[in-house]
Image (cartoon, rainbow, N blue to C red; front, side, top):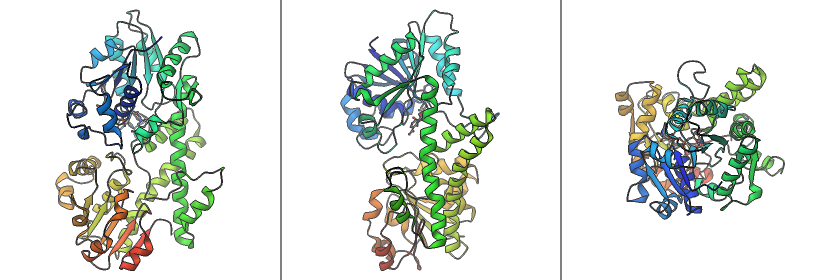
Length: 463
Ligand SMILES: NC(=O)c1ccc[n+]([C@@H]2O[C@H](COP(=O)([O-])OP(=O)(O)OC[C@H]3O[C@@H](n4cnc5c(N)ncnc54)[C@H](O)[C@@H]3O)[C@@H](O)[C@H]2O)c1
């Protein structure tokens, strides 16, 4: 079967970029990305391609090449489902905030709604592709819903988890380490797998397209994120030990990273990982393990999250302790709010939790981030419901200029590793701060010796 029309439900950080790249690489396939969120779709259709809702280096160019040719963004979900041969489900699967599994299990409400809508609308056979990250065995739920439509339509369900990293999404999609496709191990399943392989084979070498059974594919995505997050927590755990022993975490990371069995990636000590995926996917893994009674497995992975929470709190506590045990009324400048550089995504960003902890001590926070708008900073803090929205607005000010954000501050804290922070005129920042002027480098990106020469008291992570 050759796919001519694709529909993708969910125009977020995954649906938008993945479909833009498929459309770019497969001009013969019509790709329609649909979403219930009208504002988001309007932004994807904005005449000014720099105003699309997801900031990713290189994405505007890809969208501008394909949009209107074979890439479309729409709110007409039914029509796109009806016309498509293949439907990607790329909706959000956040951690449940209510009921059984609250705080751990994935909330599959949106996935189920999609399945029901596909079941209701479809008049011809379809391949349904799980692009969202899902608990292992979700495909059987989807199958159950889709197979009970009673209208004779046949569905094949594939798992095709997305491994892109925000900030390098376009690069990752154009040149993935691997593409993973899981499907049923019978004739229908194999044909569906081949149809999806054919799409990726337009630009991905065949040997990098791995095919497996559905459950291995679903579980591999959770496992990949758990392993990556585990490396961050491992190095962060040792950063605390370094601070007590005069070892330097950067030197330790270099020393172990050159061992080819360990490798150098994801060994950068920091204020802690954030993002919409790592925490939720590990919690999900923990929940599944517990639900099978695998207590040791669950406890083992849960520790990765416990360590990450500890690192964020430890960073905030270090600021408080260094500023003579009180930050009440003191301005602390935050450089960075996004969960990592080169993205405007702030979900689960360490900055939110560090800010919350400092605000609890009545600090005043000045935020500057090159890509995050003021409104998002307040949304993130209000979402925690730790204090009233009015209090958040009073205590936190968001700036468009980093020098203004740092003016009259007692301390600057680096929360995101944006490259531009390294290029700032740090003498100018120092001159406009209260003394002693402190820098808490939560990403270990600044030149400590140079800053100390200017007069700063510098506090990196892990040394
Ligand atoms: N963000 C990442 O880096 C990343 C990477 C790999 C995998 N994932 C996974 O991909 C999935 C999507 O993540 P995201 O970051 O793109 O989320 P997102 O919140 O940015 O986007 C999801 C979109 O789906 C839309 N939606 C929800 N229900 C819908 C429905 N019934 N009909 C139409 N639209 C609907 C929402 O309005 C939203 O715009 C998640 O499962 C996530 O775990 C994310």
